[in-house]
Amino acid sequence: MITGDILRDAIISAANNLSNNRKAVDDLNVFPVPDGDTGTNMSMTVGNAVRELEKLSGATAGKVASVNASALLRGARGNSGVITSLLFRGFAKGIGDAETVSSENFKDAFALGVEAAYKAVMKPTEGTILTVARVASEYAARSYKSGKDEVGVFEDAIEGAKAALAQTPELLPALKKAGVVDAGGQGFVLILEGMLSVFKDGVIIKANSSAAVADDEGEEETSRNAAGEFETEITFTYCTEFIVNRAEKCEKEPQDLRAYLETIGDCVVVVDDEEIIKVHVHTDHPGNAIENALTFGSLVHLKIENMRDQHEKAKHDAEIAKKKPVKNADRTETFTPVKPTKPVGFVSVCAGDGLAELFKDLGVDTIVSGGQTMNPSTDDILKAIESTPAETVFVLPNNKNIIMAAEQAIPISTRKVIVIHTRTIPQGIGAMLAFDPDADDNGNAIEMQNAIQRITTGQITFAARDADFDGFKIKQGELMAMLGGKINFVDTDLEKSVLKLLKKMVKPDSEFITVIYGSDVTSSQAAEIEAKIQAKFGSKYEITMINGGQPIYYYILSVE
Image (spheres, rainbow, N blue to C red):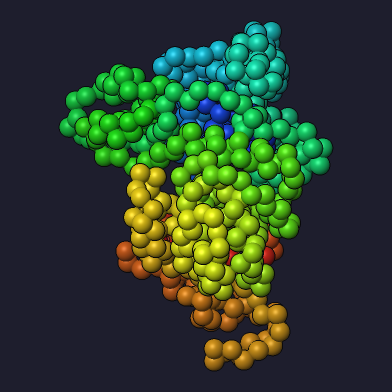
């Protein structure tokens, strides 16, 4: 019997399994455009539901499925992410209000998910995640008819998904040309496998310390960045996504918005419920899409990405990987100079695989390993700049002790170099989020610099030896809570220190709290502190937990 708690654990397991393999899925991404982000988008979409699901205990299967579907729709990223949210939306309808999930529920869930996904896509293409989901549904229906139980139906659905995935290159010429299976389809199979681990064996697949680094050496050796190697014409430049909070008095229907978007782009997906409209479109005119959407209500969670630029980055990464594959962000880098192929690029200094992947997700081209106690040299930063394929390179030192070394690279680089004076990791993240691809270099430099002024950073670390510093007598091993680069207090309880420091950091106009936990914090410890932060601050602030994997600092805190 599959209860609500079992279904909850299964979806969490699916999120972890997909996150562990997202880089491999990214590398398969050649359709509809080779921008190398399908795994990341699907992982972030499914991962968005985990926080909400972890709050549920003893809920019905129907409640769990409903909460999951709502969270996925609001957090959906990219074409693949939106389709994934649609599959789970139908999945929720198939389970309905059921206390537990039956074989019939699973059969209906797959069928309704596929129906919702096909209806929402402007031009359904076979050989994609749609095909994989459809065949999985067909296998589930046959399995139910033969009298199998709920786990048997789900196992057969996975068998169908895998069979369909293997055939995707025969259905889609772009995949056959690249020699890969469909990225979205592969992501969907990983989701199902993660769920089956709980349904069949009662085991939640654990999240790796880094979503982008395979634990298995063999997988890394055989990994291939098809997204970077594949050449094709990208018809529309901008992947545009947003959510419309529907206006109460708006008489227009979501299909009117969809019809308009189809006239200015492709890959149009428009999904709605009573409160919101989720939009995804590839277009050359994102401003027009936004203006039209504003007639339906207010917009939130806007995301515009240049897919041509993403493909150039994937090409660059593929070339670098061929020359010297790097297993993690803490190894000594080998930077290879390249010619500029785009107007703007980014270099960021950080330590920890999780932080490295986060900055890459935000658009950083080149990572320099370093930070507190391991400051990179001017030469290290210069080599990173020269290996970034851009005419103008923004550098994020993310530590006050690295700013001067970064600035010394300006006159000796062949690029135009702009150093943003980020003194902390959260400031670096804020600067990247403030970058506007449509603004000029000077305008971006000003806006990025302004953005970091709105961020308050706190850090929890430990004393390596007895010391008398900043008026504090500190014993070896004691915790030091840093605020604004200075010791604010000393303690011995890690959880209490985090809560106490956050209380000092938040202000009446604060909105966001971000907690980045380091390599010395286990996932269970992070989950416990997240629960306490949610209980204390969750009603007033939006809270995000990130596995940064950084050394030295147990926690890096950001309030904005």
